[in-house]
Image (cartoon, rainbow, N blue to C red; front, side):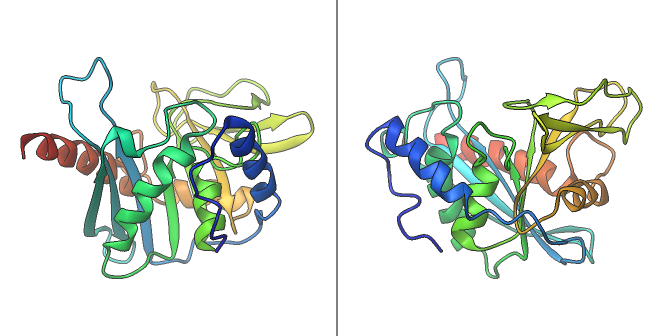
Length: 233
């Protein structure tokens, strides 16, 4: 664990320097496909367009691959004033404290993290999945709904299950993955202690009938539910 890696930076220059330093600790090797307990992480934030205001909420869903379902759900919330500002490319400083608080409330630690966000498919090779993976010394994979960084190596076929490499020059950052036919692809990238091929294999093994892998789908559902409930209290 890197004890200062989630301290609130005083500037974007400090944040960028810390990301570059932590990226050197990322390990792009490992196969978590045999892990039983997956920790799926998603967050829900109010925006100026949101009908539901109130605090930001993060959810940790503990998914049991053997049972094929949700074993436990834990949530944490923080007010906007407590969080690092919303700045693309620096979201780990905003969301990681929320995720850590939610993970701490699970009755058992997960064996691997599946995070709604980027792994190394990031301008400084340290998205939220990579940041959390290095900090917690856990295998981690990022599954993002939008592309932040990288260039697809060719056109992605329309059929479900298709994937193309996501590149930065000659270096692979991850994958564009068509999880369902007729929907926008996901960005899958290893975060820590996971190989490139293995990151895609893990996500493929967790797909159900919707766009998102099942653990993340449930994390997304519970994050929205928890934020609506927090606003009512």
